[in-house]
Length: 122
View 1 (cartoon, one colour):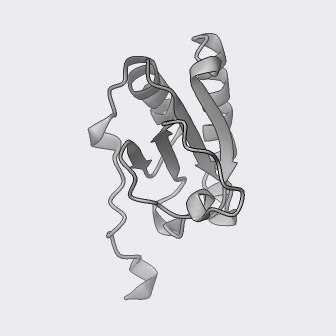
View 2 (view 1 turned 180 degrees about the horizontal axis):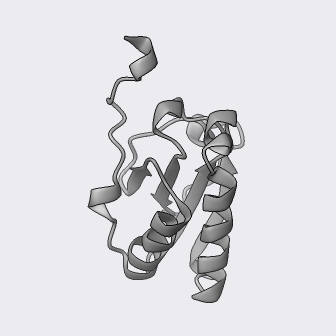
C-alpha cells in the first residue's frame, strides 16, 4: 500500500486564495476516511506558482529520509510519484483525497501546469 506526503502551500497569495480551507478539507477528509496513517499532511512554503494557487503537492512516500534543509517544501523536485495540483478548492481537495490518496489514482484533470506564465509578468 502506497503512503503519501501532502503539502498545502502556506504562502500569502495562496492563503488569500483559500489555502487554509483547502488544508482543513484535506485534514477532515483524511480523518473521516481513516487515511491519516497513510498520508502525512503538512503546510509547505511558497512553490513560486502564486498565480495558480492555492497549490498542493502530493508525493509518494518512498521511505526517503526527510532532510530538514531540502528545498522540497518550496519547490517541485521532479521525483517519481510527485504530483502538483493548482487552483485548489476544498471540494477539489476532497476529490484528491478520495481518488489519489485513497485509491492511488492521481486526478489528472486537476494537475497544475508549472510552465503556465504568470499574467502579471507579461
